[in-house]
Image (cartoon, rainbow, N blue to C red; front, top):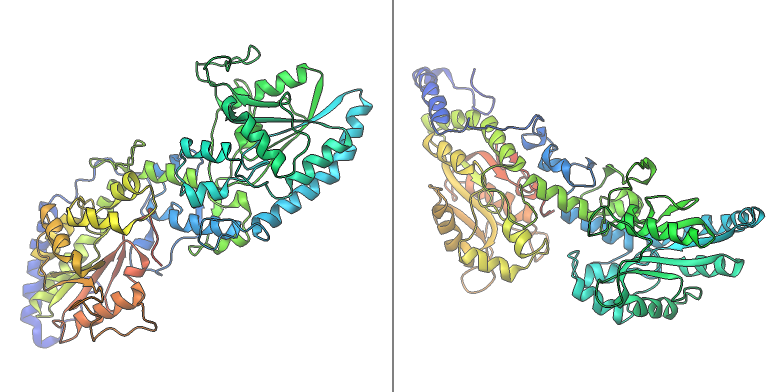
Length: 559
């Protein structure tokens, strides 16, 4: 039986049908001969069914280990898309897209208000209990995103790519606002009789600037003597004798836990330890720990030897809408941490931390090989059948991350912050490698009888370079006549008459679906699009294709 995408052949074409069936063996031989089955090292999991003809909507449920290891097993569609994560974080902080958090009202402020209210309600009873036991009660606070909020620096300035030199500018300039609600909690605890300590990973050279910033935004109890910063190893700033570490470079947990141990050796009982990172809290030496929400970065650190504190572990299951709306309801711990997402994506692409994808073997390469192997027999047979029946078959392919892989540009160059000027440099220089296994798919489809059609959001000024890049990395079949790029609105590069849009700026779906409709019309060549390939759902939505095949891509999201 022929694949379901091949139309039923009428009785008057019995001869053609016989020729078709006899030729199918040759098509299968072609598929095998081009080496598609070379999928050594294929992962144990099965690629998502959303790569085929199913509902064209992104996943919303994710399982993700905080260390990035999930990238080895879950597949591209099951990694939280980094653009959706950014939008979710922005919603949570009330950021309208400027990188600046709302300081009046946001889901983050609401959550912090509730956390602080609950903690204030416990202060008196815990203080009285400690004093009743003859103890000197104390509370320890971290700095960044525990007492001082770094969102504007992390997002508007650094775009989620930490820069220590720029961070020092912010520290010395005392530019951080207070974390919502925390000034009241700290000052009320001190007024009640608690001794307030600070322990931060900021270094000794930043101590004065940090204390000045805390005072500037309203904190009263922090003093130089009771505020612990990390040594620099220069001059008098050396590792304290009370801190011992397994290696020369102390971990965050070793530094902070041993400092809390030192505080308790001075006669204090730490009734509460507050931090936004689990590494602020691990290692003991506190009666109770409070984790504040922070999805904007993740600072991992192993626990002290012999300790197991499963309660102080990050979430691994998340529900996230692609449009960022989950940030209004999920809470900070329910948002995939962006550093963990980055680490997961790096694992998936075989990136050792340089921003450069492995071009030989990776979970991504293995998934792409498996996807092509699964799709090719049906596509090849359909191309062959329709060509024999004079149906003028074609396949349509997007460019970025469908035929050409952008990972190195997106990560090593742009650090996940898209820059159209820099993208044009890469396009004109034809710097993109081929998407794994897709040169084989295109070659098989073409040899089986399909015309190869390109349809990309790249613009007319980038058309020649794109076609040249495709040829450079091994594609054949793409021609200027059958390669559709988007108009610029300058000179002769204008919106085609076959495209009409609801607003002045066409959406990706309007542009691509109407272009596919044109391709299938008499004016566009009267092709039958037997398969439409894209890495974005917006490449595929809107019909005008027999089959839509979604390729994995967690590195950006174009709705």
